[in-house]
Structures are given as C-alpha cells and as structure tokens.
Image (tube, rainbow, N blue to C red; front, side, top):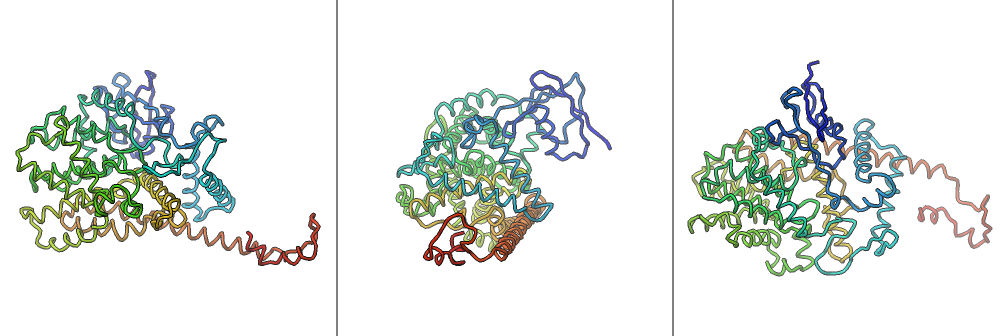
Length: 543
C-alpha cells in the first residue's frame, strides 16, 4: 500500500508521520493530535515552511526533514469547559473526555450490535436520575454552586453553560489583539479554496482566526475594492460583530461563521458572481454575518409566551430577527464600524433594505411562504427580475442558516449536540416558569435522532431540492450529504426503538418471574393490615 511521509515539529521537537495515501481525513487529524499529545478540545494549527496556516488533511504534500511543517497546539479555553470540570480535575479524571468516550462507545454498540446491553441501559438510567436530582435542587452548597431561578435576563443556569451570557471585556480584548496580529498574515491558497466548500471544518479554528477568514471572504469577493471598504473599518466591524454574539451553545459566533461560510461557498459553487450584482452578494454575505446577533438562546415562541422586552417591542412579530437587524445597524451606525460608509445614499438604502429582508427571512414561521413563492417563480426564473432575485436571496440565507447536515458528519453532529443543549435548556426554563413547553425542545420527549429525521425529511430536503432545481450542481454538494444524514439518524432511531422494545421485554419477563408479594421471609414483622396493603398492584405501582 502506498504511503505518505510528513516531517513536522511540535514545540521544536522533530516528528515524522506516515500514513496511507487514501487515509481518511479524521485519521490524519488524530495522528497529528496524538503526536502533539493534545486533548480532545485543543485546537491544532499546522503551518507550512512559509508560515501560512494550512489544513490538516490527507492532501498534505510530502516534504523533507529540512523543509518541515510546524504543528502548534492551542490549549482549550478552561472557561468554556462544562460544569464540573474543576471537580473532575480534583478527582483525577477528564469529564469531557469521558463523556466523548461514552458517546463513542454507545454509537459503536448501536452500530455493531443493533441494541444497547441492559447493563449500559441501567448505567444511563442512573446518570439521568442523578442529573435530575442535581437540576431539581436550588442550592448545591456541597459543590459550591447555586442555581439562579430568579427573574431578570434569563441567565442560563450553571448546568446549561458555565460562562456568562455576555462576553467579558477581557475576553473580547484578548481575541481582538490576536485578530489584529493575525489579520496581516497571508492565508494559504489551500485554505482559501477549502473555505469555498461545504466540507469546511469550523471546529479547527479559534475566534480570532475565524475573523481573519471572514476578512478573506470580503477580500476574495472583491468587496474591498468595489465598495471602497477600508481594511481597518472591516476589521472593526468584524470585531464588533464577534463581541455581540453571546456565549451560548448554538447561536454563537461560530454558528455565525458557519452560516456565512456556507453562503460564501454557495456563491462560488453556483457562480453567482456572474449572475447577480456585486451589491447583492455584499447584502447576502453581510446578512449571514449579522443574522443572529445578540441571540440569547431562547426562540420566538419563548419570547412571546414570556412577554419579554423584545416581544413587547416588536409586537410579537419576529422579535428575535427584528432584534438581530437592529443590533446590526446599531453597529453600523458608528462611523468606525460602518463598512457601507462610502456607498452612495441610494446604494446604502438598497443594502439596508436587502439585509433586513434577508435576516427576517430566517424566521422559520415564514418558511412555507418563502418556499412557496420560490416554487412559483422557478419555471420562469430570471436573474434580471428584481422580485425573483429577492426571493432567491432569502432562500440562500435560509439554506445557509440550516445547512449543518450538508456538512461531513464529524462536523455536523457536534452542532446537533449544541442545538439540543440549547433546546433542552429552553424547555427546562419553560417548565420552571409555567410557560407552554415547546414540544420539539422537551428533553422528556425528544431524542437526538427523532429531532433530526422529521426536520431533514420535511424541512431541509424540500428546501434544498428546490434550490437544486435552479442550480443542479448543488445535488452533489449539499443534497447527497443531507440524504446520508437522514439515513444515519433513521438507523439510529430504529436502533433506539429496538433497544426500547428489548428493554420492555426484559422488564416484563422479570416481572412475570417474580412471585406474588408476601411477608414470608421478610426481616420486618408486619401485622394483618400491613399484609393486606402489600398487594401486587401496590408493588407494581411503586416501581
């Protein structure tokens, strides 16, 4: 079997890696992770001899000891570790690492055996029971933690997210400094090309690096020259955007980047540069950047039911999306952040209207209306028709917004875990506050696969397929991966159903073997009244 040999350094120490030329990308990353002795959440960065960051992939060019790659490890931010990290460290084990190992083992068992052994089920039940006890106790002084159930800004409980909702000044300044230091570095051609594909892996990149990549998008689409955007103004705008995304599991700055990167990829894949005006592309990319600004992790249904300030301000009409728009233009209102400040007034007005229209389109309550409009115009679609273009731009940001399942599974699945964490937190808060519980967010009713199968089948695929009717090249790039994701979660759902059925059969068999309740052999003496009380119905009802 043909192999490839790479020479690189880690902390100045020379290393050599050898792997098959057809080695999977994840195996190559794992190889480098092992060589660096990096943790599961640490970020790996690989530099070529010129000092440019390059992607860790099987496509890396073989080199020699005299022309080494440089591997660098960025330790995971301790402040982002899940609750209990300090406790776990004190006890001598890595909680997050153990959780990932358990998830991997569970997935492997479901894949190979088709069901989970009874002993694993019992362990899972015990863990769930312990978690329920933790989350139902207001004061946990023995852990030094306190659950905030008071009214106010709906701060996430400690069990939901350890960091404060808003970014701290120190956190922002640290990232800003790194961003400005890196912004002048040249990004390699390999990364620039990779950035144009739906397979891009966001988990490899830090926030400061993400801002550099966003800057690359504006540059490579010629926005800097076409709209006379000063580089320092673009940098300040991107930093303010970063600052106004909150520390929540899903609707955060990395999600903003993923949506923008998918939009950027779609622009290149469908050759929209030759079909739409440059200002349309500027509107779409900037809308993606700003589309979830200051999201607090609670959806519109919660805002309306809880009668929040946003719901009252916007009269229950797309409160979040209206807020995202308002925050975007609040940022742009300051001259030092305003990337549109050199646009003529009519172009600025067009840009503002377009961004508002695109961001409001991300409200899923308008999904069916927008998709129906797009279907209706498809047979006669023309890129010179303004109404047609407006609907297409809304469809493109909608596709980008919910495009995670079009990515490789190792990129997409962690995002689902993040989304479910946010969903479960909302339903927990709804229960605590006596509000209507959003059904698809209820941890007692929703499983990981069940949350996805219906969504992919009835929302993602119909939307993606209509866009592919206009751009057939997208069939391979975004629809095939989504179909594979549907198969993956369908199989997972079936395995869980088999496991549930098997568990019920085991429990029923165990019950049928139990003798009728009796006081015989009991170590506790009971009188006639107690004996009559121990009927089979009572025992079953108590288990």
